[in-house]
Image 1 (tube, rainbow over the protein chains, first blue to last red):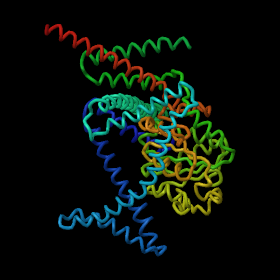
Image 2 (cartoon, helix red, strand yellow; image 1 turned 180 degrees about the vertical axis):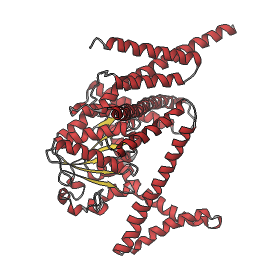
Image 3 (tube, rainbow over the protein chains, first blue to last red; image 1 turned 45 degrees about the vertical axis):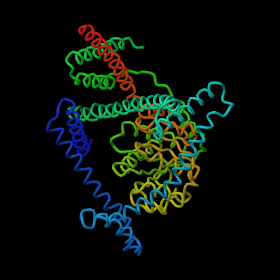
Image 4 (cartoon, helix red, strand yellow; image 1 turned 90 degrees about the vertical axis):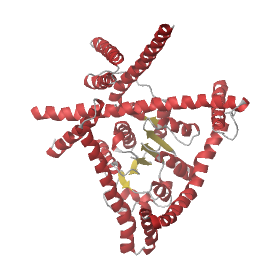
Length: 213
Length: 295
């Protein structure tokens, strides 16, 4: 292990332990790690946006390849800064309108053809015969779950009678879904802890043992 | 089972019960943290093995890759931040071992700026070395480009127009394997490893519009959402979190960090279940006692 690797491991270990120290109580080490992380991330993003967007995608193509039309998207970006001036903040709406219109245009088709229609088709296909009794029951559960959950989010009528009863079934499906998400979230968080512990024991403790061997 | 494991398991159970008792008695949640730390550290220090089942979704992803003809071209993404490497990096490693083992040509890229390009570079080079693969011939790293929606759509027309150079700045025209990889038509399978919502766009833009099969490995937090894509056939196989990574490691016969971590994962889950049951018993018995006291 060379000196750079060694220092890297110790710096990572120091910040890992500093952040974990919050579990005991708030302390200066935790605050230091938190502030350094926030500062580093912000600084990195500024550098990244400067290099990978402003330089690579605007200034370089303009001056090297003569793509002068890129001045227009650049100008739209500059207009966003008008929000800092009370008198002229309305100008930023031009850029926002462009972004909103552009995004809506791109996503309208992809969301419809990539998500809504295939998912609707798949839900309805759940009831197609030929999957056996078990498959049919599962398909029925899917269809009932989808319809009752959708009805739960129908707020134009009071949830009473048939609508109220169906919405209540929808709540049960939503709760099961939340339970699954919560279970998986716990698993994810524990995985991250395991990753850190594996680093501390294998790499950091390994580097300490390496010092004496 | 080895005989020395019996006292180890007894020690595990007794420690958990004792710390839980202290947590309830003192109402100090730090005893719970201590117990979780104990269950995570203990299996790392002492090798304990609990069984890992292979889920149908992981098997489906493995079979999809396995069914690719040798020398196919696969796009492998590293769409994750360093904060989730415990779950995602083992998936990338196992996927690369599987792909290189089948002599597939691997093209990597990332839509994540913070750490994505360097993780892709480090992991791919490390696994490529194991298999004696050559950069530019067997694999290439396109790196990162801003605005993933434009990237995903643009690669359908021309990969070179979006990525004129690879992650190290070498023009794509100078990379031999890129000579016959022009756009999605030249890619046989997309293997996503991701910790964010970009998976949705790979499905709704690339799979829906270009018809390429997409399989994915995602963090556990995201996994429940993507089962809908498995059901609709839009996604070919899914790995969820460290468990999914461990399953794939077992499928490619190379157990690694995810398999090692799963024992700790299972022990912590058992402890959480025990805590929930004990917490409810304490709560209900306290409620009954208060009722009796009021009467």
